[in-house]
Each structure stands twice: as structure tokens, then as C-alpha cells.
Image 1: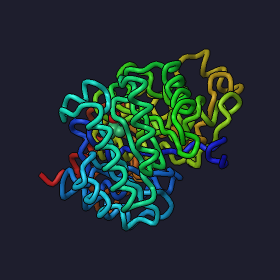
Image 2: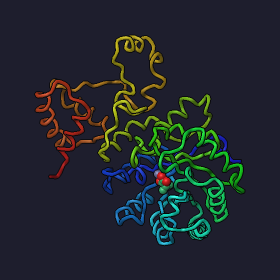
Image 3: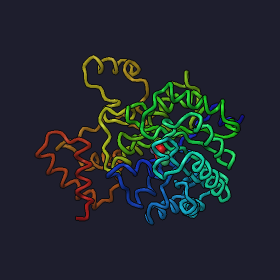
Image 4: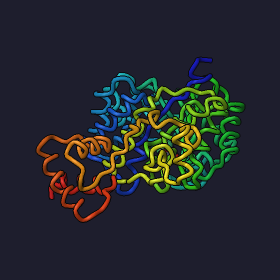
Length: 389
Ligand code: KIV
Ligand code: ZN
């Protein structure tokens, strides 16, 4: 067994693929490149940069991200079709370390869509994974809706994918249906029953429909999974995906009971969270774990008193560990230009002098009408200031 298998957990970020699939979260080409660069710099192991067959835009973004990535593996998604896989390879092949991720829905409901019986689907998996492996030596295969797939059939398909050359097997909880104990049992069962399972990496990919995505991902890791698939701010379809910041900080803060390491520099979490919120247009809820506005805020007198005496009284993490500066700049009509620039930089906006001048005038007009200016007001101001209409 390698170190990775024992205590290293790979972080696979799919903000630019599963996250961008949330209705309304579409990002521009430039925004995708920027987020990919932040993910790479932060120490994410694998970036799923898009779904190259989906559009010319996705293909171009994945290709360019592949060219620009310094350390992270760059992955693209492909259905179980030769055309998808070829297109995916054409996009990711420019990366230092490319990965093809191919998938097919294996549960009864999903098998009915392409109208394949179990044997026909098994053949399709064998052919497509073999095809992908002939192009690239880093292949991820996913049985979509794994958590609602019959156990025997799941084991059979995973075995076929491993024999055909898959190096990572991802187990998606596509509809956010599983619970922590079941998530762990599924990984344990696959490790025990599937020949060759100890030669590959198992990944966990959870959706948050019942609010259990983080717990399910961590339970899978405790059972032997060594890759967590996640997104910044938990962005993703419906109730979203496992939030990257939550699993990274949970493994860091509770390393005493979950002794696994990631490569992620947690001090970069707040900045990337804000950038993703800004470019996707999906604001982070105030009480969101780790990156919410109130995650390190204290209002009540008792809490404030405790915090002043010893921060550990009411905080299990230091704000600096997630990249928060301790200074809380309260914005109002007496604030100056330097304070506005600093606040906007904290929110992820870099402004030139002329742009700052313009935003400052708008800010003063607003401050005359409103007692306190919240982050959301500044984000709205920035939207108006940068809207070409
Ligand atoms: O949720 C899911 O099943 C997916 C697959 C494509 C891996 O996103
Ligand atoms: Zn998904």
C-alpha cells in the first residue's frame, strides 16, 4: 500500500463541472480560468474542469485550464460513448497530468434511460473504459446513482471497470440519498468483494439533498475511500455537492479521530469562496460552516466576553486558518477610499484607480441612504459598476 492509501486523501474539486451545472451558475471562460488557477494554487489534487462534449465553450475552457495547470491533475467528464471520450481526451491531453472521467448510470432507474439490460451495460462499460485507457493512463470511472444500484451489480460493474484499466472508481450518491453508516458500508463492501479493489483509489461523490453530504463523504473516507469529490461553497445541482471547505477543515480540526491529510492550504479558503460566490452569483448563506459571514462572528454579550478572554471559548478554529483577517472593517458614510479598497479586496475584487473612484462615488451615495453597508451591498454595487448594460 502507498502512503496515499493509508493517510492521504485526494481532494477532487468539481466546482467547474458539477458546480457549474447548478441552474444559473454559469461562469465565463475567464472566470473559469481564474477559479482553476486558485484551485491549483490552493493545493487541490484534481480539478474537474468541465464536460468537453457539452459545448465548444466547455471544450475551450477545459483545454486552456489543462495548459495552464501547474500541479493539479486536470480531468474532464465523458459519458460512456467513444465520441465523448475522444473529445474529453482532446481537451485534457494538454495537461501535465490529464485524467478522463467516464460514467454511466447503473441503478435500475438509470439503466432504463439508454434502455440497456445488465449484460449490455456491462459490455458498454468494458468497451468504453478500455477505449479511454488506450488514450490515457489515468482513468476514473463512475457508476452514477451507485447508492441505489443493486449491490451485486455494483460489484460486477466495478470489477469490469478495474479490469478494463480504471485507476480511480468513484461512488456517486447522485441524489443525496445515502446516510453516513450506509456510505461507509458501501465502500467497505466494495473493498472486500471486488477483486483488484485494493489496487485502485475509491472516491466518494456526495450530493446534499438531505444535508448529509459532508458526513457521508467523511464516513466513506473512514471506510477506505481516499478521494473526496467536492465543490467550493458546496455549489451544485439542487442542494449542491459536498463542500470542499467543510471536509478540508473537518479533517484538519478533528485529525485526532480522522487521521487523514490533504494538500489543501486552508488559509486560501475564504478568498476562493468569495470569488466563487461572486462569479457564480450564488451568495454564501450567512451561517454557512467555515466560510459564512457569521462563521466567526459573535454577537451576544456572553460570547463576546468569553472570546475576549480566550478565543477557544467559542471557536474551534482560528479565523486565520481559513484566511480571515481579524480586522473587521465596518463600512459607513465616514469610511474612506482606502477602507473601501481593502474591503473590496477581501471580497475578491481587484480595482484599478479609475474604477475605485467610480465605485467610491456610488458607495457614498448609498451610505447617505443606509446606516450600515453590508458585504452584499458592496457586491451589488460591484455588479452595477461592472455591468456593461
Ligand atoms: O452525481 C453524479 O452522479 C455525477 C456523476 C457524473 C459522477 O456527478
Ligand atoms: Zn454529481
